[in-house]
Length: 222
Length: 245
Image 1 (tube, rainbow over the protein chains, first blue to last red):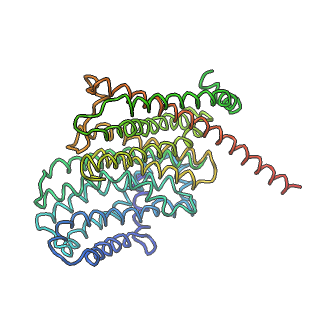
Image 2 (spheres, rainbow over the protein chains, first blue to last red; image 1 turned 135 degrees about the vertical axis):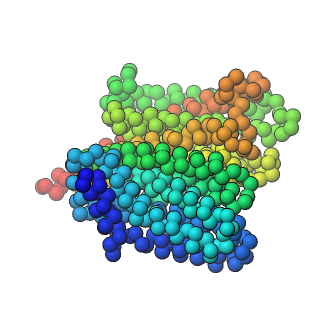
Image 3 (cartoon, rainbow over the protein chains, first blue to last red; image 1 turned 120 degrees about the vertical axis):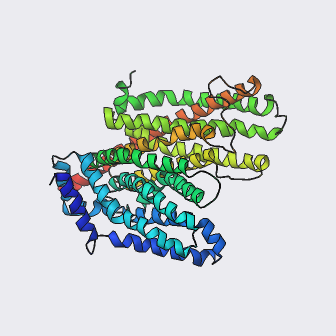
């Protein structure tokens, strides 16, 4: 068992435990999606038009809210110091933590999205597309959020600062994710172009995110 | 006086004290010349009439907003890579200035858009990416205010600045990559500017005036920040001495 693999499995185990936060993200996603028809009215045509957008916003908010768990518990009990001092390169360790966070928090969102699409009268063609775009885009959200989590790690009043820092950087992911979903649902535009850009954003952020987060952790602890 | 020579805060303060009156004077003169050129000499547009004169404020403000983030990125590198002592001071003081210029750009653009496009706002690529830039400026200022220790805050802000620098090419090329309502580039483009010199010259004069304004305000702000940190250190020392006594 390599050190990275052990770190990954440790994070996954902690996440699915009672205080871990793996399940709460899906519940928040459900609540957001349920609240929107109350506010926007039950007009099914309207809901099916804005359905992909609501699912994406719900996934974005659920991811944002779960991000401070990424480093908080480890920082509190000292495990983060051990990881910083360990022999595993910090960038890889941080990437492993982000991957574990994605599996535990974002993957359930991807699975729940089609079910919640039923509440929003989502176009049948869009069901698979929304899930696929979420699958391609949530890694970008997690890795970009990783940067914000590392920057705000020890802030006592940092609660709302994390979304404020991360949201502007995740706006492109949101734009392309919704564009791809709506293209698949029948609106004008191709599915392929925004989808490939979404994949590119995820791949790019999977490199930039861990490097920036590792730099933030190193400089924050000097 | 080289950049590394200015790493000594006292020497930097002395230089700023000497230069600031001249910078302020040059800014006033440049604005006087530029505004006169923009509002009285430049011809009115055949289509837009007099409202085109908003451009002489809107475009330099946009340029300064982006230039400021570029300057902040260089300062961020100075903080993280070269550990220049004044780099994080430059970074911290530039952020509110850049936010103000970007805000001015958004507001003047919005006021210009109402008569020209019929709307105060549209979610096209250029406007959206400039709005994202403004939000990132605000996030950066918020980050500075949340971390207590100035040098730790400086390093965190430096990382965020470098990550946010990816937005700059997006803003620049947004009018070419997407079908936008905002007009494409007319000045900084391959093949040279497409504006008539009678409008280009006042525009460049206003750009010089805005840049001088930024340099003046930035120098004064850096001086204030250095003095503020000295006050903070003195207060901490006094509190420590009182505790030990």
